[in-house]
Image (tube, rainbow, N blue to C red; front, side):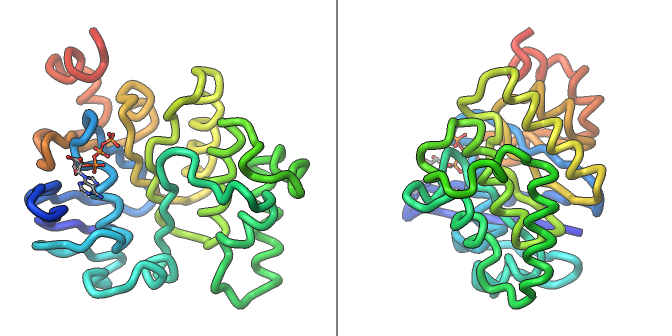
Length: 234
Ligand code: ATP
């Protein structure tokens, strides 16, 4: 479904990614793990065309993304859930969700997608008029995912959904991720929390200093001694 081949990216003289290759097959959850500054967010941003490539290619369902603008990537079927609490703070929950559907010209489809999204996140239906900036951290994370779903993606790029959340909320968010996956969504999941990401995914890549240093089935990586020591704290 997604084919990233040998991509590199730089911020001025800082080489952020070197020759990164990864694949997401249809219907799978793939995790991209690594420490601070490893290049995880940059990888998602290059796929979304927010950061330019200096080498390599990206294809989605066979279509090259290299030359598309970021809103065309969304149209092609890829939505990114940004890291942190990047909701539109002064807008209501409803307005945030409408922003996710921006550019769609099928109002009936948008309405039915709103209902679908409330099926995953019932709390948002009760908060439609509330300013997004006043939601709790967990609710803001839910709104971010909901907003991305409003573009009706086939592939979701999820950046650090567990960041800053209590273990109970992390579990709640990952339960919803599992439901989205069961309902057919493919997901590229960036996480620092390797334990939850390996449990949630089928395949994983480890990024260090902008390079993929290890990849494999998530079940196998959980047993890998180096991974246990470095990322799983045992
Ligand atoms: P984290 O988990 O801390 O968010 P990450 O793995 O997502 O880290 P990136 O945010 O992709 O890492 O950063 C990769 C490298 O690129 C880092 O050295 C970072 O300082 C640098 N970098 C990221 N964004 C920019 C930017 N806009 N300008 C300059 N350098 C940047």
